[in-house]
Image 1 (cartoon, helix red, strand yellow):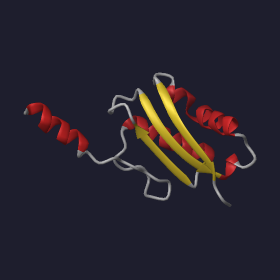
Image 2 (spheres, rainbow, N blue to C red):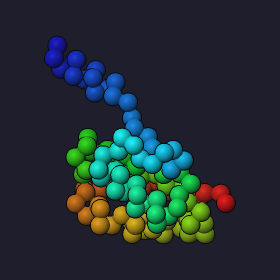
Image 3 (cartoon, helix red, strand yellow):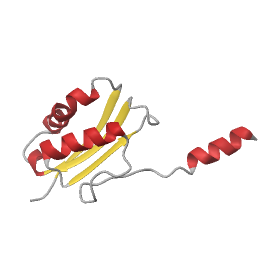
Image 4 (cartoon, rainbow, N blue to C red):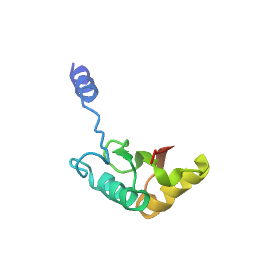
Amino acid sequence: MFQAARTLALRSTPLRRFSAAAAAATGLTQGEERIYKLLQSSLAPAKLNVKDVSGGCGAMYAVEVASVKFKGQSLVKQHRMVVAAIEEEIKSAHGVQIKTEVAEN
């Protein structure tokens, strides 16, 4: 019975999504906020979502970025730009999931 209640509680936890268009990063974990600010300052994204997908321990992050700076860049170069911006922050993480897209002017 305890397991069923615990599973239900985990499933009903809402996902946190954050966007550059929204007010600056309220409700983010410290790691999410640091990554958010680094990407915001280096890539000037039109859309930015940062989420700790490791359960809050900072071991894995999912990042979605749309930026005009990606125009003309291959997908590999876009991902390298993201990694370069957050390199110091993710050294202690196990991994980062990156999705990029070119934003319109």
